[in-house]
Image (cartoon, rainbow, N blue to C red; front, side, top):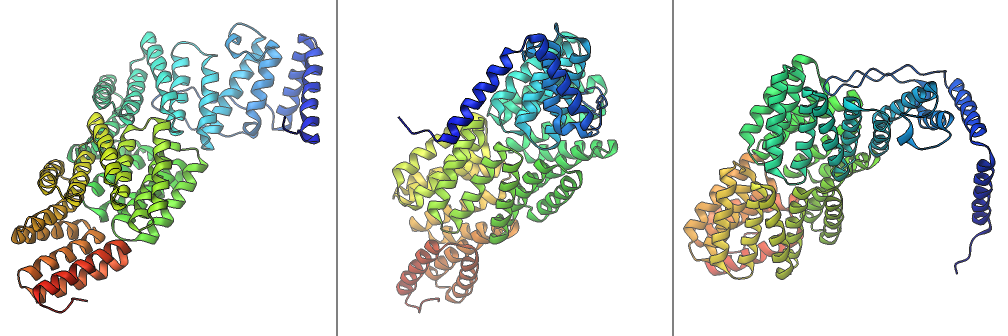
Length: 560
């Protein structure tokens, strides 16, 4: 039996004595003590707080702080027990004096609003749920909607979904069509984030139709933004840009800063995925400024993560590392678990690029655990595919194939066409390394078709580089040369500096084989300069070894 420290034993027994003394009081006396405690605490913090404005699904009024907010949880508990003599919230509607019930509602609401404002999403969610038990009809639906929103902010989609279903029922029972549309939009977001694309699309469309029927510009703006996010997740960037641009114009007309900020940030994601890093960075910087000026720390963390992605993709390695870590710290502080998982996966990709394979592997595994905990199927698939590339680099092709197969199944399940194309490209590269050139060619061509269909320029350029290797391995040097030229043009267009370096070196090897030694030397040096800045040691070593063999075969001096 483990030894118990004297101090621990004392504290435990003291708590037992305290509880026993409390239970010895008659219920009426206990209620009076709670009422007295309530009065003292409230008076010490500026007296009775004002009633917050009514809840509104579309246009919530700004919450005005009060000194009692810091102790609102305690005040709500004392008011409940003063009125009932019991902690049971479920009975609060039918027991206890009316004044105590009113105070209980008031301070529960203020505690929930205060927790939301302080980015304590999980705490806020529990308080909104507790408040929902004291309400009925559409009022209960609005509390459930807020609770679900807070759970989503905390990355706990499994807790949010049943609350949204209950809120939807309350709004339908009450005939509240506008609030019904808002709940549908929130539910659609949960469906999308958990890979149920068809259900998500249907719910988003219904939400937008309801907003238009009700004639609410705010609801239409929000629904259009949500439709834009759906298109991003499906890789439909042209449609996403159209919906987000419409939503942005409406939010700006309504002077809705939060909605405007979300639209700008998501437009940045559209630009990034379409190979326009400069526009993406400008949009993310603007969204970051708006989030900071409004005190939206959750949004600030997400925007920092987006900026880190751009830094990473444009070769600013140290800036990317620093910004990912800053974003991770912020998301951890505000309890945004879903974003933490995504950021860890992105940080792992950068660690892998820097040749820190073991660190990358551990970051991927931590990200994978979070994705599974919060039900983020889309990111689970992406992380499985990225983890497969670590095993590929370690020449563990069996594990690589298994992880890629799992990833591919998830991409197809959630309708993530871009990641499906990337995964097929990774599988083709693994086939090439394993010596199955024909299978590699078939997979890479299938990958390229998917990526070009969705206008994923950056990823298509990478796959073209892999295809060039296949053509060279099959002895078709001229086709390899032409394919490398195509890949290089895309890398330069989208600012993919690391891939530019790799492809310059691959192109130089093809030029050596065709006798164009002077251009080979120039383009080799360009590639080496980029890879020394943005590549990893393993890749450099392999390319230099390959170059020396090619030079010996061509009868020329090494290019270094």
